Image 1 (cartoon, helix red, strand yellow):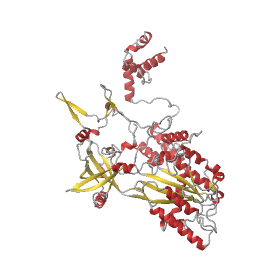
Image 2: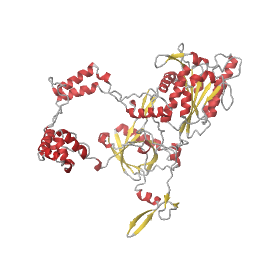
Image 3: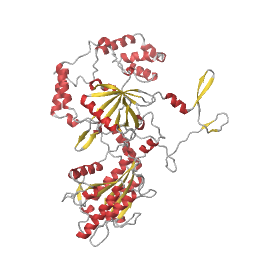
Image 4: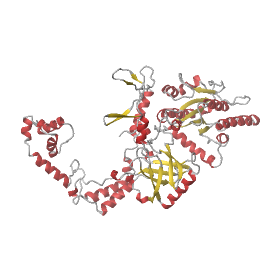
Length: 624
């Protein structure tokens, strides 16, 4: 079943013309990649993925190139700029020395990444020394401060847009932990002060500065020397910075192609508790299914997206109809006309509020009640002050007594009962893994739950049953192959990864399609461990016995008693026809598909396909 991730979690009352909806959807990210191009970045080497030495400049460029390629898929509406500092040539709107903004024709300095930008940036190392060059921008006796200039240029690039609708970031790549180490005391203090002030000015404008340090082989990057003050690190954050920064750098070098959806409020709802007491809740979609993007039609000449428009033409006059179409319902030989607004109001059978009905133990909530993706709810004090305090009190009480709340959710077109399940906050290594709040689970109607249908109720007593020893052996085998701390986020969808790899190869005119690893394939190496093999052999012997010969039984169909009965019925029914005579006279086509399948079932042949395929299969089996 094909699902649109933008529609699965969209509420019935989401209005695309709503100002709040448009503001939420317009949120994007502006990023400036600030790469140090000093000679130290080219002289220092480190071990790459293939154990070959590579320069820190190559590492930084590879991270940026990988980010640009994945951004096309993950966040296609984000805009980026690439800026080098400590360069010989200069190219920036401020005409500052030592700063070079890399770009391509027909693209703004801060804009969405294009295929041409990615292709030319992939080859930047080959032409960098020839066209841009590298030099120290901070030297004794000079007033040049390339780091200050780079922050100024980056801040100017990020003036586009508002901080209310866009996240603005500067990613700084460098292996120099003390950029002013070569200066004397007075000059060093002055440049340090002005650079820190420039960074503070940028942060006051809502621009975050993130450092991605590259440690040299002979010494560890000391963030306390200068950059701790620039990005505002102290205490525990300072101690944990280097491990987290190293992990972030590794993640950028080996990024996974995946679509990212901005966390937005799906809608705001009113939660009526009791006696006229109501609070405001925001609803969120925590998990969405990811499918390949929709097809975009492009102009064959300009390659720009096409905009489709629909017009209504009168059949009698051929004139273009300007007025919106009117709907009508025949009633007593008359057409009663309705406006679209009136139709929407007729369908609105509930005010769309959430009303608390009561509480039940968590043991009453079964897994199979969850028929559709749940919605996460969190309080908001924007309209109703005090909503957070009341929600926290209710949340803590439900966790303490192991209860879930039953509520009536009056959705406009599909009202139903829901279960509000409280979730406590889960943290790991100082980071939030699961947020506190409640999951709103949509409960089924009585007709949605059906009893198990017994296909062959008469053979229930003959069905094989596992004994206690077989159950224990099966449990031991499952325990051996059980994946600890399993999460669906650990595995990438191989079909989507292949799809994205093909798109990348087509867009960048690459000869080879990037290799994709199927992480869902069985772990053959893990299944050959001695403990797993012993558990599998013990389970096999408990079910089939010690004299079981697997090779001799390969290809033989094991039929239950019910299967034997069905085959006997099919064989008896097949005797009612003279199949050879019918085939010779060409009269098989006069039989129904059900009659033809009787012959196929009696001889263990495939019964799928159209009537012509069934007849051909019968004639082949008969040798005619």
